Image (tube, rainbow, N blue to C red; front, side):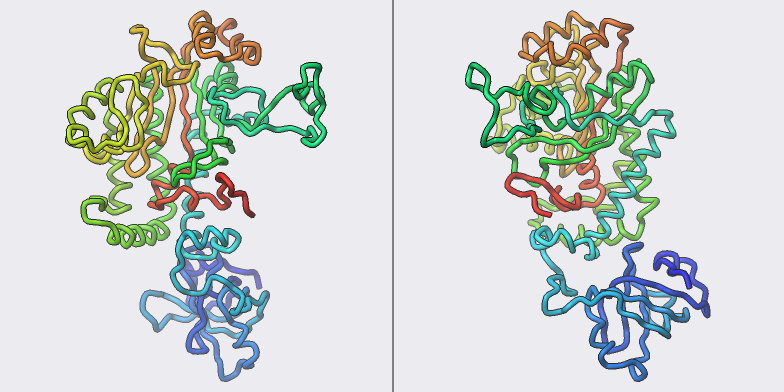
Length: 476
């Protein structure tokens, strides 16, 4: 008999039907009741064992996380909170789990402890829920862009350019560090390396995506990116996934409209596809909030917050207006901000969160930042001081999207690269896009883990990616 997934069985299983289910034991109580889960749903299926006619040796092997195959008949459940259960007629242990060695027993474990067991933590309710929501969001991204006629473009992971110009890249090399080839100047001769020059893991697929936009109109990338930023925070990873659309003939307003539409679409899609997982995470979020001091608790529950973001327009204001709002604020006047607030500084997370959580109480899109704190490729505004940049700020997270209208004018782009010491010889091909049929275009980057963080209500970005990579941490 073919296996039926527990999710399908709970939704459509007919009383009296004979079925086969397979999964892992969550709990086994009273020597009779197995709570079985196969990962297809957060809900367990109860399987009832006739312990009087089952060997004692077999019953002893029904431990937490043992893998089993069960054949039986669907019955109407006598217990509360479940429509059906299975009367076990044939039970086979597929894989034992020694309770003296298995580290995840049926009790609450801290998320810090679970990070040390990344190979087993998907078996917990909280992490399985997060991963299913992550899966829905990933599919939702492709669905959104396909419905809008975008072309999915694969950009290189190994690249010779540093798109952000920050220098925080991971070098890729086959050179023997113990015996590197040296040039006449005594420096490492990268002409002898695999690619014949220094290369690194990509920090962004944006520059290459612009190539696609200048031919195909609307493109997007969705892939891994890497930052060698020595930042051990709850919001940063060394390896993460990025969604980067690039659109020909889009100005900054078009760009903002698309970013807002995409986020609302993703939230709606996750709520539609993962109602039970999000209800579980909503309850978990509420419990976590209760442990915080009253003045630090969120005003909305997780599901309320998601619906609020989906239903309301994002607040839009310029960087200059944001500075004025911050300087008029009580925290600024009372000296509560840790970092300075003055025109020309890059806003810190505390400033971003004040705007979102206290001032406007909804997502905010800031535009027109000072050119000195933004990348070389952003379109320069006519005031000579700012660029057509936009950042989308979210509660609990801060910046979730960064984007801009790109500079399409060759002379202005070259001048800006010279001012910022960005090597033109490495990006000759990028400059040629401005020589042959240049056009206004825009794009943005969404850190995938940050939208997963927001939708699931988790507090640490390392808990929304299966195998987090961070400074001094590359286990599994």
